[in-house]
Image: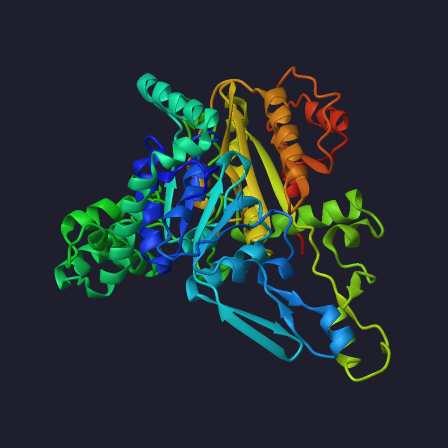
Length: 555
């Protein structure tokens, strides 16, 4: 046990997280643990202490930093070996160093997507395969994958969440008695770490031996047909996608049984692991529109159905008389995102700025040292330098702020705005871009959709929007500015485009707030208009576009 590391068995509370980490230590093929929660709730402390519980004499704990490159993660070419001995050799990366140990990724939601994809693929297979221009290398990479994140800093896209076998969200709430006990433990540790850790050696060794015994007996644990059917029924009820949840649940329940010395999975093992497996995979039943027996997909092609994406009839009773019952054509909404994209590219990012922002400039290349040295392997000196196109680190985030005050209900303004957002979200999903939606109304703001890769199904999220009350416009814009600052500090540093969708019915002034590139979409309806949207757009240095013009179909 490390004398400077807080012991796993000394942590007070967080029993569910302890269980999840222990199960993954017993069976790394479960797929690791995704730990979500605010700062100061022992996420990192418990995860780091897990390395002391690994059954092997060598139990490395490897941290994947946010700024790591692809070569650092998977392994890199040893250039010096090629130059001096004309031999091709790979240097092991972090995946190799984490073999038979713990790979810890703090703020995993801020890692670039291509690194996370590689990381989770290796975690699932246990093999790291590196391909470099005709040469290949592979090595075992079995480890407990632990990722921590603060949901306030942005979400993982659903596909990546699903690759973690288990997940848990910590609330960071303790009783006064627990807080006192935790503080006392920490102060005792800080005064004399070595003595503190020594006092927990026996408990730690007992737990390590119990994990080792469970690992050895895991292959003998059986799962009855009735238990398998129970898991399948519960997974289906949770509307999980695919069968990964079932497989992870089988492994987790078996590991739980092995840890408690049982040779057959019981209903108690299934119950104990249910929330860990389904927490990040559940999909609630989408709400059914009124007077319609079945919800049709908003992604159907126009010729397949006359169902419209802009059918948002769930308005408050007081707005029914003002609601326009006309429906928005599906083709109109499909063209919405393209019109906005054209507006932004033509008016807001002229010349070569657009190509620079999307990483498509002609000189977006860097030296390909692998191909250069490989081609010069038997030559007395380096031959012509070879280049390769550099993967652009710039991503795009669509940051949408939607006015949900009572005034936007006039003339079906909110319904049209929902359709507009759906069009933006569909295109963002196809381009694998990020999306975040902030609503503001009834004198409060809410992140309806925290930042993540644009989801495939956006309509269930938009169905949650309800309008009413006043317009906290400035409060919402300040929150946008704070979110943009967070994005600038993120490792992927996405290029952000802001869409402020409002009817402008607020006395708030926005002068002095900088949001960067943006578009104000004016949802003001009615014969007499105040025209405040253009004024607000000018204060923010945004482009201005009336909603009706935005929804106009182009031929």
